[in-house]
Every structure is written in structure tokens, then in C-alpha cells.
Length: 217
Image (tube, rainbow, N blue to C red; front, side, top):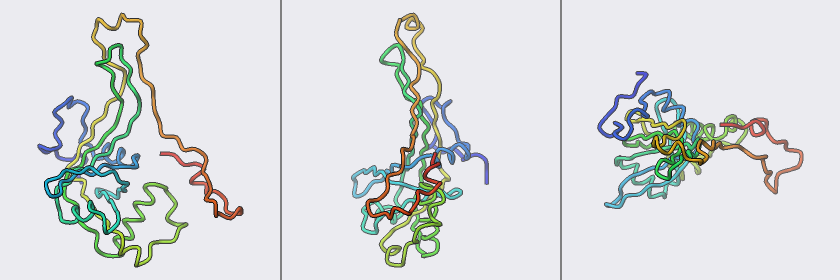
């Protein structure tokens, strides 16, 4: 597999292209750190953008939902889809209102999703999905049964048409504004887990797993 994803008319960055990247490793790293993607599609002439969780295995992105979901039904028909993931790393405070910004990492993926039909492949996709959110969890929990698998639609989208865009660093002010006595810089932001909160019906002798106590993205 190529180290780079071939740019297309849809993925070519036209606004500040120097922030863009077509390196697979960069795209994959951003996808692997995120939790939520936004899925954009058109159904009966109406555009929709739906937030949902996802997982990645190799060059394949997996999303899942109820078999009764409108999004899953529409995407199962092979319609064009645009999937985006954004990570916010900091607020960029400039000396002028115009130059305030956000440090971020984002990925846009275009394509057409395919339905995962076989039970074995669907089960494996759900394992990928679970492990993406909480590594080491799948080995401890009950796997989906046939009824649950039937009630769940899983779709896969090849990461063949995608790009990343990243902003880092300080604000960029107009030269005249650097003399202003206004604080400027970056307020870093990070997603930090708090202490796990046990279910009310959890027996007292069941300990918190180490993968939760040491959880990080």
C-alpha cells in the first residue's frame, strides 16, 4: 500500500494548502485518536450530517447503528458519503479579533460505504469498534448474539479518498498589532479521563480494570 493517499478534486486543499497532508500515517493517527465522526450524506434531496462513533482497521473505517436507522439504510444503498473527524488541540488567542483561531487536526474521507453482511465479519467489525473506544475491553465482555447482530447494521468505508488538515503554533497577527499590550498565545486543550464511576448494580468485589485506570488517548 502506498505511503500517500492520491489527492482528488474533492480532497485537494484549496484554503491554506500547506496545512494539508495526504500521508496515510497522519490520517490514521488522527482517526485513531478521535471518538466521534460526522457522516454527511443526502437523502431525498435533503442533506444530513449525523455524529456517530467509529472504528478503523487498516485502510477501512467502520460505522454501525440500528438496522432501523435512516442513516444506515441510506448509506447501505451506496450513496456518496463524506466522513469527518476533528480533534481540537488548543485555542489560539491573537491581538486582534480577526486572527483568533484554533489549533486542530482533522480528516475528511469521501467514498461509498458497503454493508458488512456475514456474521463473522460483522462481529469482527464490532470488535474493532469496541477496541477503538476502549482497548482490551472485548476480551472481557459478552460478544453480540445472533439476534443482536441482526438488529445491527455495520458499514465499511475504504480510506482511499481522504486528506488531513492540521493547524499548530502561535497566532499570526498583523505586524502593527504586535505592539499592543494584549496577552496572546495558545490555551492548550486535552481530553483527560476522570475516575471511573461504577454502575449502581455492580458487586463491590468487582475491581476497576487496569485499562480504565490507565486510560489515555
